[in-house]
Image 1 (tube, rainbow over the protein chains, first blue to last red):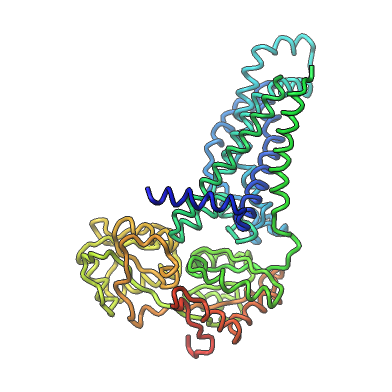
Image 2 (cartoon, each protein chain N blue to C red; image 1 turned 180 degrees about the vertical axis):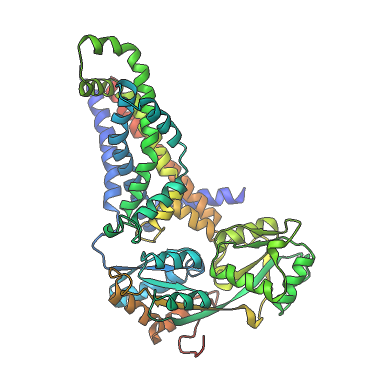
Length: 231
Length: 284
């Protein structure tokens, strides 16, 4: 019990004093996860909608594949991206290993399947209403996707938030491709892993509380937007 | 249709979103910073040595040092892939092999510390105060007391395995589940030993900086075989042209210079030095 009270005290102290190390880590965590979510949304939403609404060969196989990839272990994604970006790997010349960009790439790969699969389900449900209308108006594939995604936009917000949750919570991928380098690639989750390694459990737990508060803020902002749009 | 409450709420929402994202953009590391990448071990990182040492070097040379801290085995693998400019580990046979294979031109000794065996206060194996590590390990095996091993091909792990050899024991063949190889760094190993009330081999630096000791204490120390030497190498620019040879060499040279050696000696916790500089000692 003492660990938990100490953790809470540490967390509050870090937040209130706007601890410099904490601000940097929080800033990088947001930058990496929000960018990854943006990229994954741009790729995943049209992909998911296409699998739901359009007819093309291999459609069912792609749907099953996307569902399966939702269970990709973050550490495996990290390892694969590491091997691709390593100097000895195919994309080594880019020199991206141990940079925030590598972390963004890894997290994007991780959450595209989630965003795509959930979008597919949302659009499929919507199609029950819209199928006839789209067929009667003779909408082409691009119009179909745009219409469906636009109609479903507030339901899809939950999908995007699920993606953000997965990205901001994972440690396996960013640890391997980022290297947890102080002042460069250390994010909230890798900082928690490090403090645990040093046996400083109250600080680790305190950082965990800060991370959850951050997540809460992001979700709160999203719900504000949704509420505002619905009026 | 657009009521004031909608506008104000939307504005609030958007402003908060932008603020959050802006916070993220503003607080990132500058990409144009001059830096080198050093592959090192968890003992140099978890003990707090780098945190104490690197700012001194950066202030002097204007070169930031980005440390990727893994076990020795993984650090060497990183260096062999050309993903690091400098290698700083603690297993001489592996380091000599690294140089022999052409991945570095030379290896320089930097500092040493020692390993200790930590264990529970009640000490079921009865090894407290021993200065004979082989004998102590024999007692732990005989008592089938829980022993937590790094199991991760690190310098500490390799040292541990060679110590079991000097005691003529092979823990891999141990029965009864008392030998637990967890495949993780020094910190998690100590966390596990504390929770299990078991024994573990630790480097003194990480131990002194470790905060979750539970009922663990240093039980065995002082045996000459527990000596732990660190070496540093610049990854060969002949093998990897992209390596930052000049800046990497600056760091290597600083570590073995009088300034660097003093900075290492000055790092203390509660008046106790964690690492002892010995760059000028022959034969290490």
